[in-house]
Length: 328
Ligand SMILES: [Cu+2]
Image (cartoon, rainbow, N blue to C red):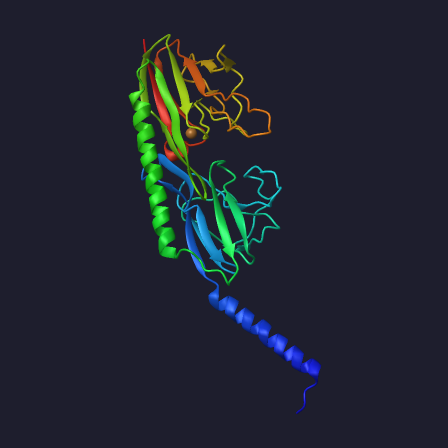
C-alpha cells in the first residue's frame, strides 16, 4: 500500500504526539507536602506550608495533607488578583484535584487535620502559594520543563518539612518562655504570642494560641490587662455570650482609653463583653499609606467579686480559654 506524502506526515506527527504524551505521563510524578502543624495540646500552631519550596516537572502533581485544627486554605491566586476573604474563595472553591497554570485562581475552602487536596501543574512557571486565613504563610512551587533536572527528591522535602516544623515549635518555646518571664507587672495576661520566620521559599508563622496564665486572681476594683504580642494573629477576650456574626468589632459596652487600648467594666458574672480583634498592625509596604496602629491591649475592670470565665472567640476550640477570679 502506497501512502501519500500528507498521510506520512500525519502519521509521523501523530507518532511524535503520542510518544510525547506517553513520556509525559510516564514521568508525571506524585509529590507530597503538609499544611500546618500543631503541638499535641493544639496550643502551638505552625501556620506554614511544610516545606515552603518545591521543584517539580510540568505535569506533576502535589498532594497536600492538612495537619492542624487551626483552619488553613491552599490557594494559588492569579498575578494581579486582590487577596480575597477566605470564606469567599476565588470566589468559589476548586474541586479536588485542581489544575493550576497561573491563569485561573485555585483555592480550597478552610480545611483542617486529615483532609487532603491535590493540584496538578501542567505548565512551567514559578507559582506562589498562600493561605487566605494567614497573611504570613506563603510558599512557592517551581514547575520545570521536562528537559530540566529537578534538584531534590521527596525524601529531601520530608526532611525539610520536619526541620521547619521543629524550628517553628522551637520559636514558640522561646516566645512562651519570654511571655512568662516578663509577667512581672501586676494583673497582666499575654493574649497570644508568636513569631514570623522566613525561608528562601516564603514566610512561616508560629502562634501560641494560649493565654499566658489560664487563671488570674485579683481583688474587686482592680483591672486586668491583656496584651497580644503576636506579630500577626488576632485574638479576642470574650466573656459571656459570643457575638453573632463578625467577631472583629468590639461589643457596644467597650470604650477606648487615651492610649488606644480598649476597656470594659464587668459588674456581674452574667455580663457579656467582647474585646473584638486584639491584633498588631499589619506590616508596612513601600508605596502604600502606612497601616493604622493596631489595637493590641484590652483592659477589664472588675468592681465586684466572682469567677469570670472567658475565651478567645477565634481559638477556643484549640483550648484558648481563661478565668479571672475576683476576690472581695
Ligand atoms: Cu485566639
